[in-house]
Image 1 (cartoon, rainbow, N blue to C red):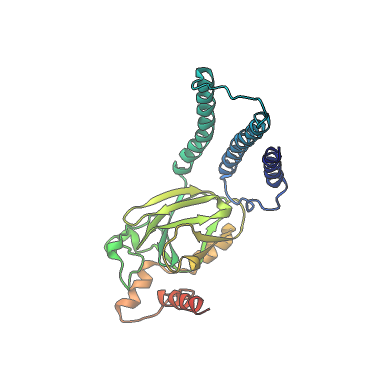
Image 2 (cartoon, rainbow, N blue to C red):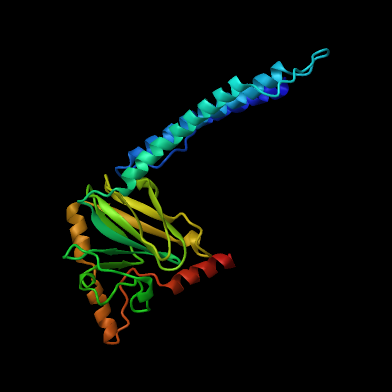
Length: 292
């Protein structure tokens, strides 16, 4: 009797915690409310199944508790029950999978008007590359990564000369315009994740993954790495700022292109863009944390 009551209280407590909990998602800032709806559908399906199974267990514990003189009936097979369980399980799994497949199809089918941007992950910082005046990103490859070309932009590709490089600094995007995010890793597995955009994707060395989204409100949003990528993983943070069109163009006009950044290096200059955090800076922060 006590066990049955505990099982019922578990169900009641879980349901109340879900509806009354103060913790919920961050306010959405992109077009991907479809993802929120899909997760809510999953919550309802799994919540109903969880409640039904636990309450059935409570019923069985109470109904078939030990009583003097009662004997259990041995029934090795029940075809009717097996068919019911098979059908109900198939319907539940289908209901879980179909909304996710629908959203995934939208997530990777990029509208033609979306502008390309590239996100580069490396231990342990984020960098970004935007197309220049020609509207095209030049080719890039990890084999082209050097101390003077940390993002691996192909110096022989004319389309890459006017690409805007934002190395270890904040990325700005215009509000209300779709962007296709090309994801590339220089070293190990990373995962580009912005909670408010409901957008995340693994970054695999040697491959280019992608997704798209449309920022729907201005603000400052934190970039996280959602893949354990080494000792400095907790420090791999970044910032995406969604601006009005005017503010975005003003910021873009202050950035340097690949040609501008590579030209001083060819003449022996060791200048570094403001706001850049080198790998040594990250390593120093790690040593500080370890010392604590």
